[in-house]
Image (cartoon, rainbow, N blue to C red):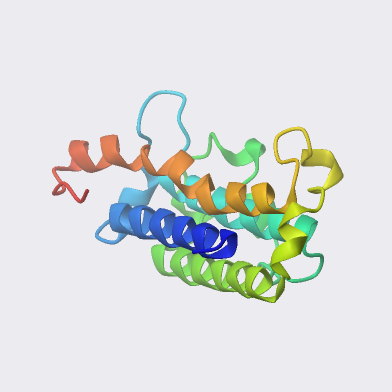
Length: 163
């Protein structure tokens, strides 16, 4: 296994866990918040999608798919307090965009020469991700940072334990 295989493995695992946690939730259930002060699950999905597209374009400019008009703004800090489902997408829209962005990320990783993983990461994130490889690792693991927030909603809804 090489570094790109390890990053791919983390991407696959984090996507598997995230999707397992929301595959049986309805659009309405995605509007639930895991607790006071937490963002709705729909917002979190949109945040993950827009963040990955942004991060990908930082490390591999122009490779992320264009998100629908207004999508990034719909999932900004300014909208985290919204509870109106009409301000967010549907589960299927999130799933489709999640898959499109992840496919672009995997494609960019595949095209990257392995030696480039050791190059300096994007300037603005270099303190946290000093190399291109660590930057791709951040992209790979970011869904896991949010996946746990789906569990309290699942438990409150009486959904089965997934993992």
